[in-house]
Length: 339
Image 1 (cartoon, rainbow, N blue to C red):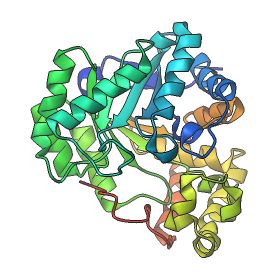
Image 2: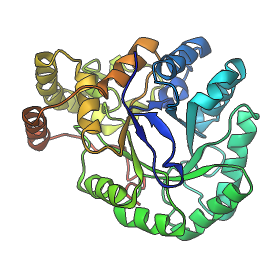
Image 3: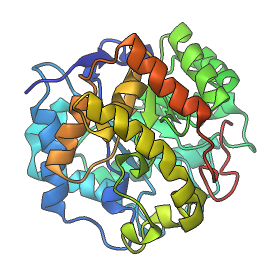
Image 4: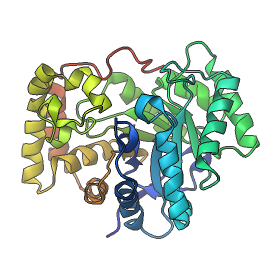
């Protein structure tokens, strides 16, 4: 089994990756982490299915752990410690840049990003290079150019290879890229999260030759149809705090799941694969980033990048998206989106 590939952007434009990436957040951002071996098999499944020479784009986070701990990076280090041959088959992207001590407040000052990058490398324990680093949010207290210049300095010191951005506006992406070529920008894109600013970011990224890493293409799992009430989420799962996953909103929002499922069944694909295929159709430079902690699910997600959507399919899906009245914001508060 092999899957469609594409390339990254900016300084990483010579790197071929799978058209569908793999997010590791929910392996560890819960009260009890998923067992290592289950995580490891889920990671390996996607990597093993790619053609020779292609890397799997893997995304982790400095704070993707219970109480914003470094559990995610520590799990990644254990993976590469056990499977060192996979280091060259994976392109590792990590988000960071929050204040230490369990804070959700960004700190993208030169000292803040240095602390973050050095902590990530410390937790990786030399098992894998930090291929790409991105501040999880734009810090409103620090000029963007100052943050990017600090990352350029860390790159010169050999502490990271490429620079990315996350949850930024199109204007901020342009400003950041003017300081140093940006390899990838990470934003949320799915049939229930296709905002006007996101459309601008996708267009600007294409113009500037930057890859778009489209996180949560399955609406944080909602568009799979498996989440019908809050109790369907594991205890301690951070999605339980999100407005869209409150009981009344879930009931209302399930209409979009039903509509997409009907289209998927006609095409003999899963609703997850249909959503991933739609995100992938937004451009050669757009790379869906679903999460998975099961090998079978990883392969199902990757196969979504191979699903071909006709003009009629796209028109029908876009009609569902345009008519959907999604209830609940993406996050419980502003969360510094589109900085």
